[in-house]
Image 1 (cartoon, rainbow, N blue to C red):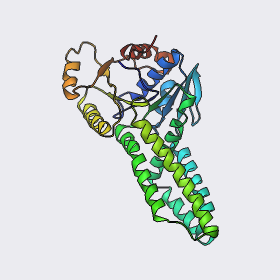
Image 2 (tube, one colour):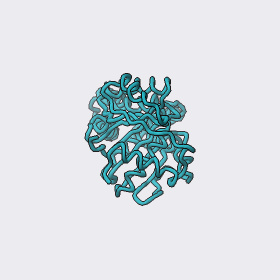
Image 3 (cartoon, rainbow, N blue to C red):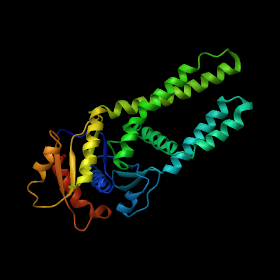
Image 4 (cartoon, helix red, strand yellow):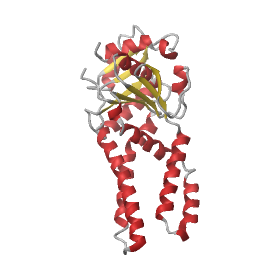
Amino acid sequence: MPPLPPILFLGGKGGVGKTTLSAALALALAEQGEKVLLLSTDPAHSLADLLEQPLGDRPVEVRPGLFVRELDPEVARRQYLEQVQENIQQFTQPEFLQEAERQIELAGQHPGVMESALFEALCRTLDEIDAWDRIIVDTAPTGHTLHLLTLPASMRAWTEALLSRHGQGQGGPEQARWDRARTVLEQRRALFERSRERLQAPATTAFLLVANDDRLSVLEAERARQTLEQADVAIPCLFINRAEAGTDDLHQRLQARFPGQRLHPIEASKPPPLGLNGLQALSRQLAGVLCLKE
């Protein structure tokens, strides 16, 4: 199998085991000497439960070379709104400021703001790729993830429309205010553009799909694969997690559903692994199937 790129997303239907596989893969790479950031965007905070230790919105080193961070949706939303409010205070004319802040407060309760805030936090983390050998992103269920992956284009279009709608000012304080606003918008547009380019560069990013051998998770994996391929996102393999030993027809049956896709059955662990020590066997199994360096 070709070497894995520095940014890896693991995604699939809720409950298929992507958090467990993300943690096991991160552990395998850290034990081979890499500096790894394992990042969770799942609001359920299941990574802390799996590792049996408290985690937060800042990277915590849980093993030598293995750092773990859980993006906190509420923290991301609050920081996002604070940034918007700060920009509004700089750029809005005083007579409109109170109403603008009221509208921001109302908009802050919309679910889309939470997704935008999480995505911006993710983009800023990916912008720090030079600080890590590998970033592994344990994502929320596939539908949420695919929406996040489409946000750069929609947010870029929105920013461009806003910039084009406001021409040059008439000089003076109004011109200076708009120039500052333009700078902020263009910085955000550049951030999202870099993220889009990273997501669509096979040498930089890959998406590892996870499914179980059941109808619903396979159907969701099929839909995810189709959407990701349309978005030019690389999918080096599909993990069939919790595969039962001795199921001889599993690979053949699923290969017909995913033609041309590299499949990796991962045997079920009984009991399910808990804690870093409990992940060791699965970590070694992943190192083997992915041909990671020894």
